[in-house]
Amino acid sequence: MNEPRYGLRQERNGSWTIVDLITRVPAASDGRDLAGLDREDAQDIMDVLNRDYLARRKSPLV
Image (tube, rainbow, N blue to C red):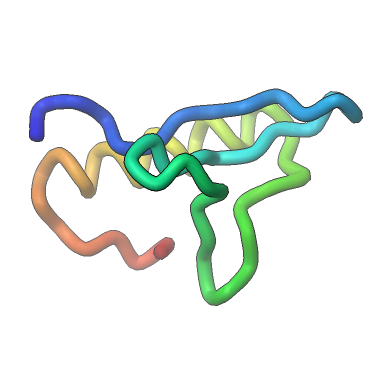
């Protein structure tokens, strides 16, 4: 469990999606896919998700 769980994928329209690297589907928060984001926001959210995952904490974001 030393590897990050979440990654970024750039979509054809230029927006970014946070992807669960285990399930290969977009990560979701409150039932909404974390998609259609700008790069900076996607990176910030992904960093929080991975930090919480690696610390074995339940993230409030998912």
